[in-house]
Length: 404
Image 1 (cartoon, rainbow, N blue to C red):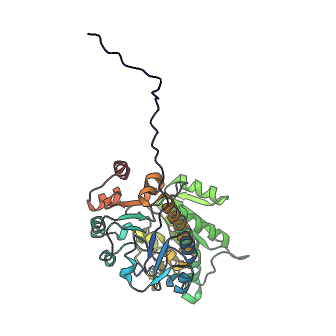
Image 2 (tube, helix red, strand yellow; image 1 turned 30 degrees about the vertical axis):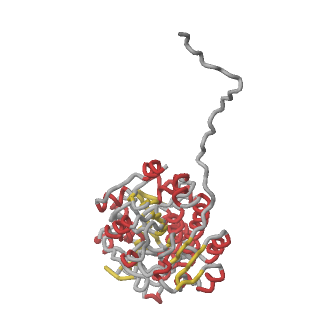
Image 3 (cartoon, one colour; image 1 turned 90 degrees about the horizontal axis):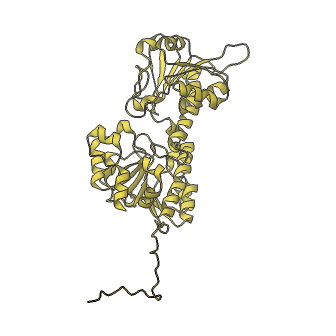
């Protein structure tokens, strides 16, 4: 029996199969809701009318709650002229598939949240509660936080601009409380000919510290900067382009400088958790009467032992004859500028999310965005929050890979 040979015919064509590429889908039209904030003394709004106008012109639908822009001096008329729809009912706003808030999600929001909603908002680690995260997990929410949102240069743009505002505002606040009209010491912040300059001590050489230093120097004050990180002190000098008096945090040197200063700024922050207390009550007690402490790190507990939370309505208290200003959300006092800064980051991001075909697609293509996501379709993807509340952590990279 002869074995049959395979027939090879020239009429056969051998073609490779085409490769299937990860093709981006067509842009998605987004439905965006902007509620009016009532928590955390929040005056900012996440999208200003100009940004709303760009989104509407790109085919997106934006609904804004009545008076949402009031704190930043944007009227309903500004928003409706920009193409947004003004809604008087809060529950209606929360029906939008994408919510953009300028304050964190609070208990009162929970009942209004929808299944599978996307929320872009701050997170305020210090004020976070486990039940809020659990409820958002139940509703399979995808949430992006301002604090951890990274841009292409690897920095955190919203945190940076808020820190710039806080740093720039510090000297304005200090000047206000040193004046005689506010029962201050009656000292002009800065220096004039023939009079020794005012002394400012800044603890923390991050962005807040850098901008506070910049403004204090511009006013003519004498500035001394402390930090426990020598690299940050070097970076500060490079960014300022001039030599400033710097020191590592050495308690004796710090105590000596605080004794003779008019303004002390606490701007040390830790990545997560509480800010380190570096100024004891004893050090504060030996400061000059009428001098002022501004503790920017108060939202993480503060760096002065005597600091206690204050509000925009009642911003100061006096202890050991030293004025303490411990308002946690300084940029909210300069709400219009802060809203413009946030809007500058979020508006292009939303357009990008739409171009990519929605948040899920965007997360697949954009590694920087992954940093900012702490909930993805109900899975908790932030390791720090999972540790803090003992909740199940899911690695976002694995989650995304498994969905493909």
